[in-house]
Length: 311
Image (cartoon, rainbow, N blue to C red; front, side, top):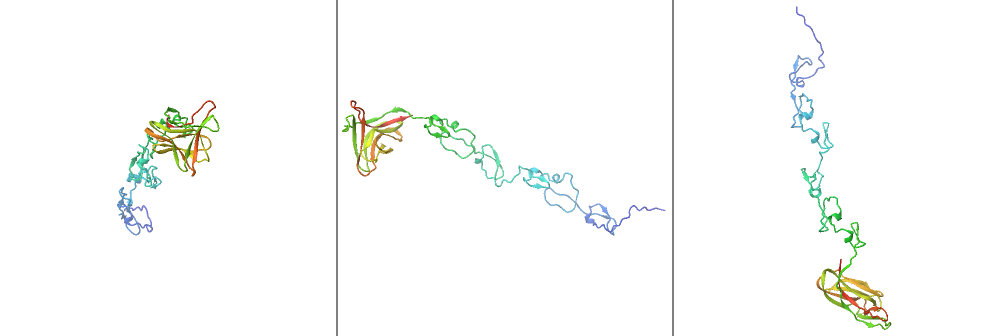
């Protein structure tokens, strides 16, 4: 007589799985049914799609990066975490980067709008031949290293240019004064001096002396009169002309004054130089220049025009 051994007697009433909910090829028991075989399909995540299909997933010990090798830090934007993988600090949104290659140091690379890596070309250098300062990157240097003429000895004394306090004091390298006008009358008030008068109509000017010289390049026109004073009021000015163009004007001649007027016009070749006196007032005025020395020595009062070369 055969003996039947009951291994397990279970109440199946709570078991409600359907065959489509159990992995294909696996057997189970559920409520009021004989043994059943599951029909749930085995599925997998494909690296080419973000779809997550319904079904049984066998899993992967390497996780999602084992399924799609592109799921790594280097491919995720900085500040973003995808499936617990934090984005790389070097992966950034560059849509607001607007630098141009000419605005970046030459040879340095960067990323800006357009995506591709770019190489800067914006390095500039100062040129001693001109004063231009183009926009761009400049390596550290000193202005005096760029232009060796930026030195205290080349700057007028008392003037500071880019931190260099000038010490240069011009000297007369060559003197070509000429055209001396010596017109004099013994002074009626003292026998020790001479004087000359010139009448200047109102609001006009008169030419005191003219001289034509051939000037050396770099020279300046000059004119002068010794001990000038007006007969009345402070209304007269001295003017220096070259080739009919006024190049300098003195202030109002007040009291007794030695007049020297230095012109700034470039002097090359033959030029006319004139010393004129201008009357700023309506009435006619006279100007007197005089020379005083002593009772035994006579000294002519004079005017001069010509040139000096400055170094």
